[in-house]
Length: 113
Image 1: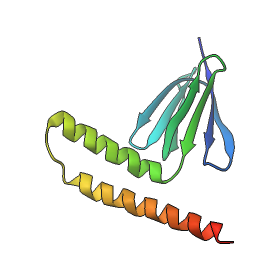
Image 2: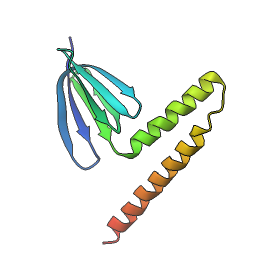
Image 3: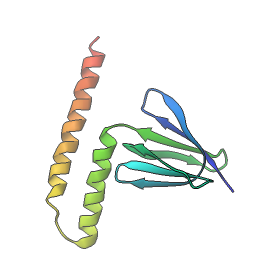
Image 4: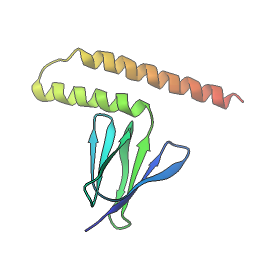
């Protein structure tokens, strides 16, 4: 059996958040992890960025914008599957654009020094 060591990165630093993980699922802007004992944990605003079975590594990227991004994708996928427009998609898209613009502005400010 393959148990993973899970690390999470915010782009600047990385830390171990779980060990002996046998299950990972992306749900509503978070990653749900379950270890060999069946204990679950969650990493919010995260996506799975890397999986290596040989080295038993599972890496997550965690940024606040990812929650909105995954919510947008979930609404879109459901709309396509049901062949039905959901007005929430535009609200979520606008929120995602606003969050993205704020990230860009923060980078500009940080780079100005």
